[in-house]
Length: 172
Image (cartoon, rainbow, N blue to C red; front, side):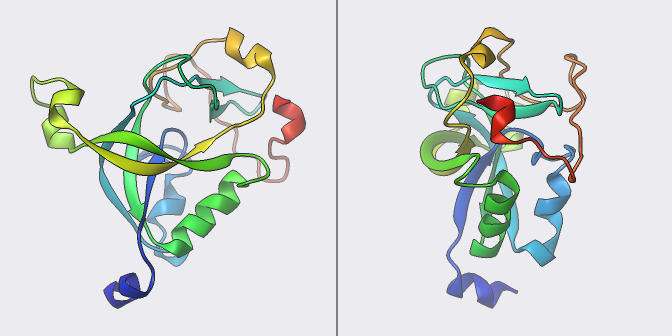
């Protein structure tokens, strides 16, 4: 397994929605048949973005509109090229989501539990983030979240319907 890592460089990815631990799509990242994924720690964007839950499927979207919304919390992973390809397929990059490399903050879970602020215990790193680049402006009128949980107080359960996934028509 590890010898393959020398042939395939690792890619750092920031996930904020259904791919996080204990969220509906996290199994994809745990399945070694999809490639290698290693949890590095908690992440936070260094730029504010709107994190919204939208469409009839209650999908979390990070809208590509910098300096609007919140600094968003998520998780950071190192993944191999096979896993990145699988994530691109799930996120329909580049037709639906667009993956761009951004500067984010990374902190270990243990450090985050200290009395210090996230900024004090974190380090800056580059990571790929899946953004929704084109969207209805009305998506900016709703609630914008700092972090996503399928079991959040918003009560908006993610709909796992693979036959009828969300399309661009749902957000444009």
